[in-house]
Length: 403
Image (cartoon, rainbow, N blue to C red; front, side):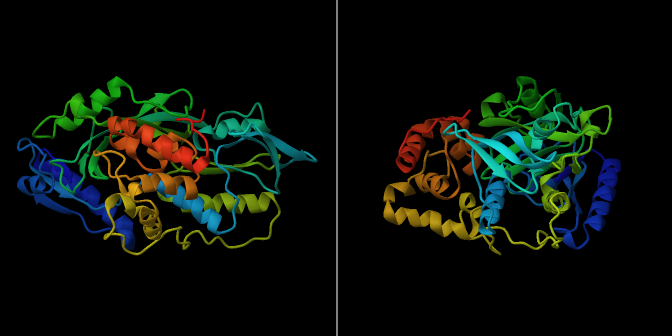
């Protein structure tokens, strides 16, 4: 739902989203339409009753980024890849001046590993420049960075529709999107000098998000309503633009003189195209015979046609949801929620360790479940039980965050 303050804005946004529908073609989720102010409030009851001439309703998709990353890793495993978690590239192997593999470090055991390969792909995201410099120590930076922050509040009053604020003070848009029973609101665009592993939103960003969304809400949100806040770093390909919001989110693929393939930039929505371009470049670099990419039509691990009958927190497991709930039969205590404020159960912890390479508490609360991003206090209260379950599976006490 895109609220408009007057008829002129309604026409402007309507025309823009109609063009969006045309460009989407057969991939469109549904055609945009104009609704009255009352119609907008029926969709998003939290909307203020003043200052809105009407709204545009348009359709888009949503997803869980961490769960999609796990599905991609398991799809690779299904297709013969060897997946290694917590292994860091620390050097490159050369043969006749060409890249012939990587030197790696197992961060759990401290073991150094030599992995030889005909082609090496650097898909390290915000750390892509660091990997490039293992090959070329003086390589100029390809990336600049911006931090995007979000807050999570309860879903009461927001209904099932998302709210889009079409223009913020810094020239961006702001979303309030239903997500796992809560509402995630963001984002910001703050230039950042370097990538960091666990970025944190600033107090100023949180205040900006609340101030901006409150202009459209009947009951303003306060800091006390924020259940969690988180941030991410965007890898932006440097196009010599003057601000990070104008720099390209599109991906690039480069090959160094020694043959290191780097894919960087881009967005989740174009990951299949990124994969095809990167693998094609790797095939050329490693002198492999050309094989047409299957990524455009390859179904991901766990894919099912309709997950609507599953509880929200199990939908991202797809066909694996039955394996998660089957753990309840072996140990009924695993059916108990980790916290009254969270949808997740002990079974999801055990499943994450056995099948999804979870090694730390943070793996579970942030990257297998989304507990840390839905309710930070509830996630912290769940840590002792999560720790005990991981320790039982691994035979040792896990670190909260493996540094």
